[in-house]
Amino acid sequence: MFLPLHKQFAADGVERAVADRPTAERLLRDCRPDFLELLGERRRIFLSGFAEAEQDLLERTETALMISLARMGMRHGSWGDDFHHYHNENHALEILDGRLGRMMERCGLESLPLFDWLALSLFATCHDLRQREAVDFSHPIGNNEAASICETRRILALSGFDRHRDRRLFTVLDLMIAGSTFDPRPAPPPSEYNTAELAATAGALAPHLPQVLDREVPGWREDADAVHGVALAQLASDLDTANVGEAFFWLAESASRLCQEREMRSGRSLDAAQSAQPCLEFLTHGQEFYFFELHRFCSEPGRTTFAASKAENAERLRQVTRGLRERFREQGPASGQTVVEAFSALSLAH
Image 1: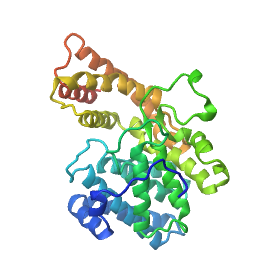
Image 2 (image 1 turned 60 degrees about the vertical axis):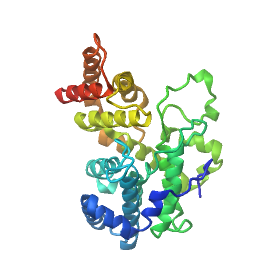
Image 3 (image 1 turned 90 degrees about the horizontal axis):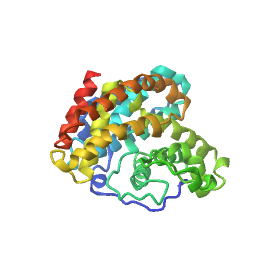
């Protein structure tokens, strides 16, 4: 494959349980029939908008979308036994349905070729497939993303894509998923790194993929598939982080979900006192740092679709974080749940 990974990740029990399209389709029919309706609607849009659209290509893409979403729902989603509040099938759908659909409407279907729309669709359901890998900041590509790349390659093959004939699709998905690695740590000062050797800075990896590839895959700029993959990684990153440009209620709701997932992954109960300060920090300074410092749109379609809405959300976010600090200034919160509820109430008020 194009992108060298520092480690290979094998199939797990969920991957073995949802091993084909019929199994995935049965799960989706029972648990998310709206997803099957969305696939039908997108097929109609693509067939009417692109004269070159091939039924076989759409069929293979739909198979991969079904398998990946069904696995998300079973592994970390609403019909599994390891529920993650943020990284579940609903996050995949808010990208595939809401954000990608909004981009199609705002920029026009003709703004991208069919291949790109299909690749971005697959990104939506594949980039967060794995969430339980050990955190390791020694590599530019996160372990969750590397594991998701490995599983995505197997899903594509299972869906009828060939790694030689369809090399372009394998390559761009490798790069889009790698680019979704997100480092929440503050960027180091310029004096502490050599930009020629830079692997990543804080925030999304996508804007820094050229530097990473210069080091890891010299000569990648002569590979047309890789160059296209880097460009799509910028666009995919904008879709993944476009909660900043959604209606403020949904921006706040996504922050709340991520906060709850963070506490779960840290082993802290929301009802416990030990979760109070981490939740307060995440929903005040954490949101300000993400919104105003870490987040940047890095594609023209991303800016066209979401930048104006992000600008409208800026003052509302400041008001909510200011209000949350005021709420607990004299007496600290009793638990994380108290903070989450106060944050939600303030968000609704603004």
